[in-house]
Image (cartoon, rainbow, N blue to C red; front, side, top):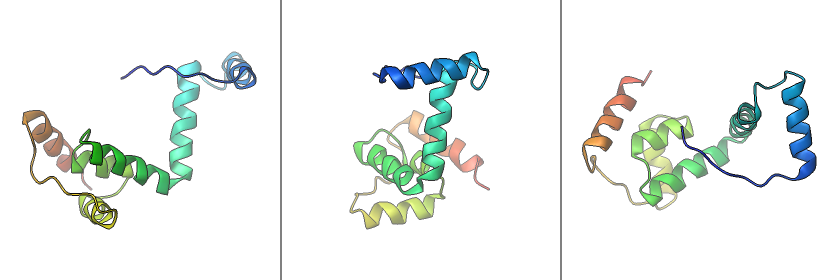
Length: 108
C-alpha cells in the first residue's frame, strides 16, 4: 500500500478524529479510504476519467485501467478510443505481463 500526505482543514480533521474516537472508523487512514471508495462509487464518470488518465500517463496497463474503472477490457478500450488515447498493445515488460495475466484471471 502506498503512503500519501494530505492537508485537511481543521474542521474536517476534528470530525475525522471524532469519528475514529466514536468507533465509526478504525483509524484516520480507514476514514480516508472509506471516503475515497464512496466517492468513486457515487461518481463513476470520475472513476473512469482517473483510470484513463493513469493509462494515458503509462502508469497502468489496459487491464488495470479496466479494473480501476470497474469495467471490462473491451469497454475500457472503447472508452480510451473515444477519448483519443492511443492504445498500447501488449505488455511492455514482465511486470505488465503478470499484471495482465492476473487481471484476466479475475474476469467474471
